[in-house]
Length: 289
Ligand SMILES: Nc1ncnc2c1ncn2[C@@H]1O[C@H](COP(=O)(O)OP(=O)(O)O)[C@@H](O)[C@H]1O
Ligand SMILES: [Mg+2]
Image 1 (cartoon, rainbow, N blue to C red):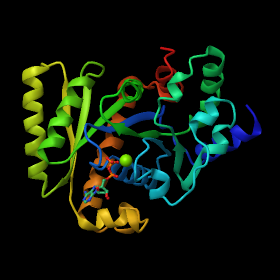
Image 2: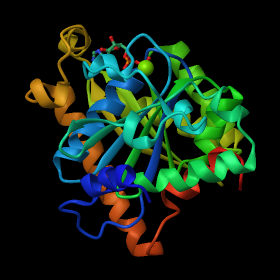
Image 3: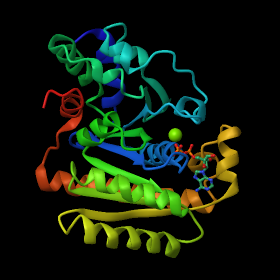
Image 4: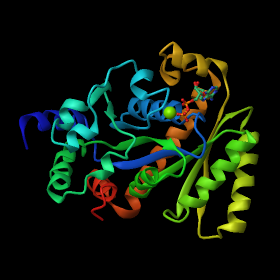
């Protein structure tokens, strides 16, 4: 291990309690613009401020890129690491004490790499990230092959929707596709008026899913997030909702979601002792599993 990689590792390992392997959570949606980036960024921030080491990976190329949201510039990304042109140390941007941005790629390029030597060097490199408790991946929307690879490799998949009928239809289509590769699936209903509206939408999707997909799919509600115009403004003002607007309703909702994810991680640790972790995630992603 080079000094560079170990420096990054040291940052991640500092003040660390025994938290087990990295839990990889992919945030996705059927339709774009439903709040994936907003939720990924804020959930990551909340988990990090609770003392977890969190990596936030941008695997979507959208309008509100995570580097824009956090007001940092990411010139190189995970593709450069894969090509051997950079190390994780060079691309990872430290956003907060416990929060690390891992600039990603939409994925199509990443998945062209199947050369065993390249992949194995990359997997070795990725050990620099092993100190992470969570890796939250902001994926693109839709059911493309690349997104499915990310979902397949993740420990947990969170599907985000909003109350509009087109988004609900697309969310259901997404659930159906994911049900073929995952047996557990969580949902967040964003931009609701109140939690009752969120629950109602979840129940509708769950009922249709049980009817058509069957009982094998464990679809659960992770939470809903209320709508607030200042969330939309926050992106333009480069304000992170849960940091700088922590007293608005959506911030409380996102904190509850982060708390649920933290609880779940603890339970998983008790169940299995150790999860797959970061190496397993990248191996699965790059088709080595
Ligand atoms: N709870 C909310 N209330 C109000 N606006 C929201 C909320 N969540 C997200 N938005 C806004 O919706 C837009 C799309 O969100 P974004 O996170 O970029 O979606 P995605 O990543 O899914 O494309 C942004 O302008 C964002 O600020
Ligand atoms: Mg986005």
